[in-house]
Image (cartoon, rainbow, N blue to C red; front, side, top):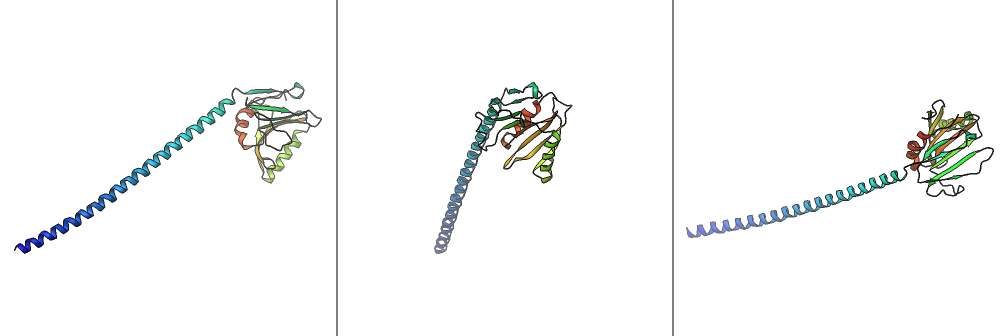
Length: 215
């Protein structure tokens, strides 16, 4: 009888030992899993915080850059050529090329400093009055539309609603994407365009809505 009880005790002791070992292994595994989860969660929270800060900084940078452009400057042209007037960001500088018979007005705009006009760089804004009839200038745009390099639509300036021109976007020049407005001015044409996608928003939201001139 005593031998039987001893055997049972040994078996129970063995079972308790196995249970203890299993419990210990499970506890270690569970703790390890919790630590990994905590570490991963902490890492995700940290990444989320960093991303949120980056977005906030970027948003502030964009807001600051936008506010820096205001109030805008106003260009007023000579009455000889329709008193062309428009606004542009005050952070932009302008360079005027000496008038010629074929181009009585040729302006280059760029933030801060205007690069040399022979540099081949893209400019924030170009403004020209050409000694070419609107119909001929429009035909050149229509040819680019046919080739699929530009898209165009009819356009009436907000401040000169009795004038019908066109507004286009696409390849302004080889390797340069942007937007363009073409308007008739008696026997001449007015061209305003940006040579870079970077300045399309400024072109559409500041320059284009402010265009005015005497047809």
